[in-house]
Image (cartoon, rainbow, N blue to C red; front, side):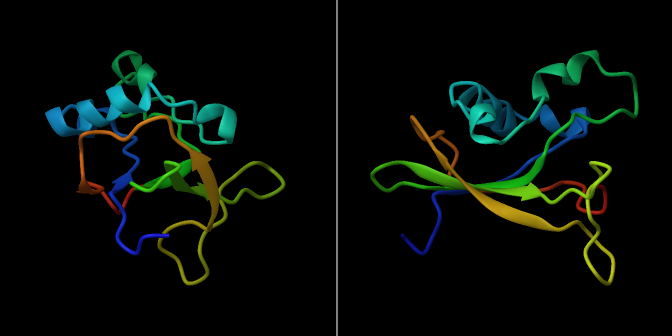
Length: 122
C-alpha cells in the first residue's frame, strides 16, 4: 500500500460546510461510487432540505483513498453501542471508529486533504 494517500476527505455533516466548489466536486464524485452497499452511509443528498441547525447523517468520519491498482479506500466508520449511538473515545473528544476497506470505480479530481471545517462537532 502506498504510504501517502491520494486523498483524505473528512466527511462534512453541516450543510453550510458542503457548499465550496472543491467539496461539491468531491460530492459529485462520491455519487458515482457504490459506497453505501459497502457499509458507508452518507446522506449528503438531503442537505438542502434539512431545517436550520440539522446535520446530514453519516456513519463514517473520514474517507482515505489511494491511487493504486485496484483502486481502493478506507472509511473510518463509527463504532456503535447497543442503542445505536456512537461510542465516545476514552478521555473525551471524538468517537471510536474502525476501518472498513472500500472498492472504488474511479478517483475524484481532488487530491491532498479535504479538512473538517468544524472539528469540535460530531
